[in-house]
Image 1 (cartoon, rainbow, N blue to C red):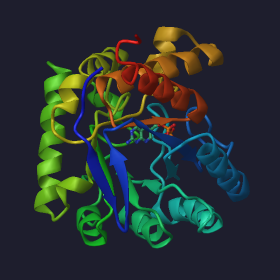
Image 2 (cartoon, rainbow, N blue to C red):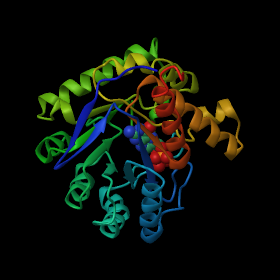
Image 3 (tube, helix red, strand yellow):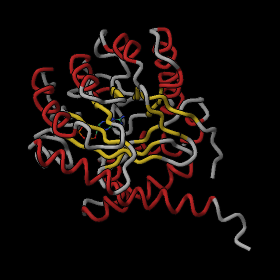
Image 4 (tube, helix red, strand yellow):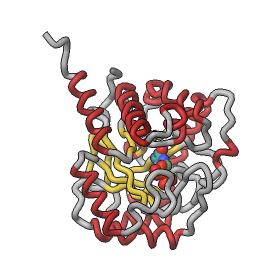
Length: 288
Ligand code: HH2
């Protein structure tokens, strides 16, 4: 198991310790069309209840999103509609969650509302590229930010799934986006990088990136991995939902062993079990 440096990830007035053990980020899609749970948490009350359930199951962060980015058929959602989806959930959650909230959006208008409602992390799948107002907002609000690798937008990213060397290209992109964020005033201690599994990537590209996680961890920033239920998992493990969940947990275990800081998953309990097993193995020290 790779040894990692410990980062204190600054979240406004809070900090999360990254690097000691992998944190589990629970996915809350407040969308009618997300690929695995579209429509399930579209009702704000059900969404807020699910956030609390994920916290109780051991999630260290809840990631709330109001726009699907699934590879086939995702439509760009106007900011007002995205706000109309996430704001009532944030309002319901106000003060009820102990763990930080992350807002999964590419739009500054959505991020601004979420930060005002108490979110501490902006999870931007465009790595601050989609909206010129996003980098200044993140810098000014001193929130943490996830910079993810993708090409194109939610509707067309699979058109760009062509690489000579996917690992080097993703590495170069992420290092450049981190540099640009720092130039825009974002503190390096608030940056986390994500290879963007399934975004502008064929299954073989996502698998190659998972195989190269120790190399990505060596970029010097905490790494987040989002493999949960994605099509490359289905393509490898089969379409049976139980097989997809087990295979997702297996990917989480591999990511944990490689030293990633955060795994983003729908089924929090199985990822938390993987984290516990990894911690037990790490502390076993020979077992004598
Ligand atoms: N994956 C999805 C959405 N947001 N954010 C980060 N940082 N990393 C990811 O891998 C990632 C992400 C897609 O998954 P999901 O939210 O379940 O689906 P949808 O986009 O259809 O809502």
